[in-house]
Image (cartoon, rainbow, N blue to C red; front, side):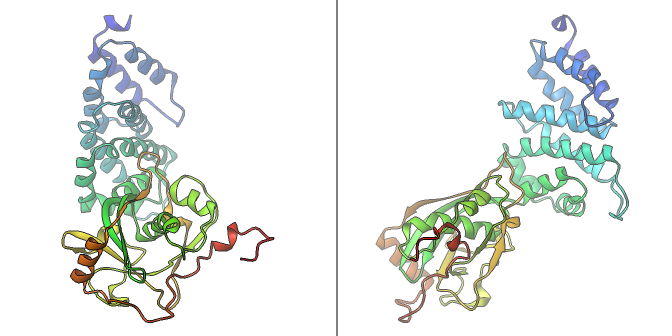
Length: 342
């Protein structure tokens, strides 16, 4: 019986079976080794033994399968922190096997192994805010991930996860003299932030354009509809008290680049300037189940707080008459039945 064999011996069998793994389909040998380990009463203690072995496994697919198995444990409550540095060490090693000339072919073994390894790493890091912050600041790792993200989906998933940021901001509708406290999670670019903010503010604003359900599904989940969105406002940061191109929030950049004013990110919703910027659903992808994007309106600020921000940011008391409050969305027509003309 499995419990008559030491935990160390069972783990060694798993590692040896992973070392011998060839191809994407898990071998009978490795499956049997996992099954035997699963029957041991102290199987949860195997995490540290397997994690320590991962960087030395010579089969990229075997290494990736071990990472996925550890990731499954994390999804069921195991502590992710111990394994993460070992997984990243393995990732660095396998990425180093990819030639500088990316036009050269990469073996299916390496590509598949990186895919599985990336899957396991995402499961771990998405559940460890400390490690997430640590590796987001690792410039060498981020540069290497960016270099090879087109080679394997796994590298792209890890790069996207580490590129995503969470935080809070104050969104100020300058024309309406209203302000909202907002929390956002797992966003990698401000175009995604703009879309989610427009989706959440729409029910609160009488002048808001219509939003298509297809856009909502793509921006918040794994749906793959062909969608386009556009900025309803000119999105400005809090460094200028007037609508100013030089104080724009650029959609391609991370939300982390939005400047702080009094320790708070500020997004100013100015009436549209020039042509409204448009973007497509590719800015919302890839969807990571372990770190889904989200944004919520925490509260609308009471009038005294709004007045305080107006003073702090030196915003104009009123805008010129006749200025449009928001730009019509290109998705507005998608939800209008053919028989309606309003």
